[in-house]
Length: 130
Image (tube, rainbow, N blue to C red; front, side, top):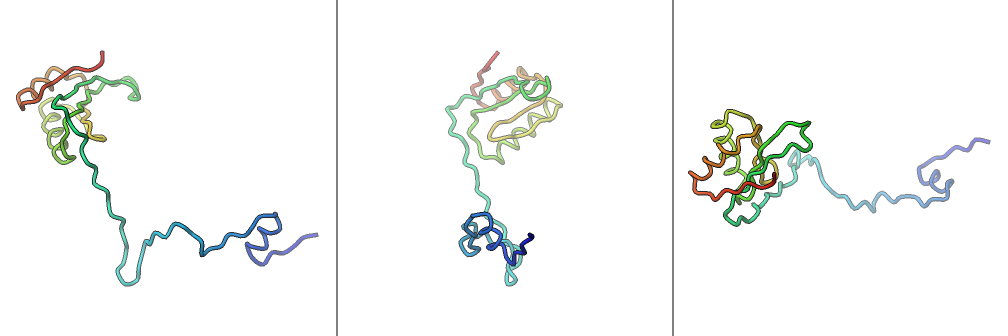
C-alpha cells in the first residue's frame, strides 16, 4: 500500500519525527535585498600577534612534500606591513613565498641571507628548531 504525502510535515510524522518549523530558523543571514542589492558580510580584521622583539627563523619541510621553506614569526606587524616585508625578502632571495597567519614563508633554505636582511632592519633574530 503506497501512501501519498502532501507536505514535508506529513512525511516527517510518518517516520515518527516532529516537523521542522520554517519560521524557527536561527540563520538569518541576508544575502540579497531588492532595495540595496547584494549584501556582503563585514570582514573581520585580524589583529597582529604581540611581539617580544625577536624574529624567529625556522626551516620547515612538514606538509610540503619534502620542499623546505623558511618561516619568519614573531614580528608583530599588521598584515600589510608583513606583505611588504615578504615582498622585499622574496625579491632579495630570488624565490617565492607568502604570508600565512602572521607568518612569512620564504621558499628554499635562505636563513643566513634572511637573517642578515632582518638584522639590517633592526630586528633581533633567532634560529628556532634544528
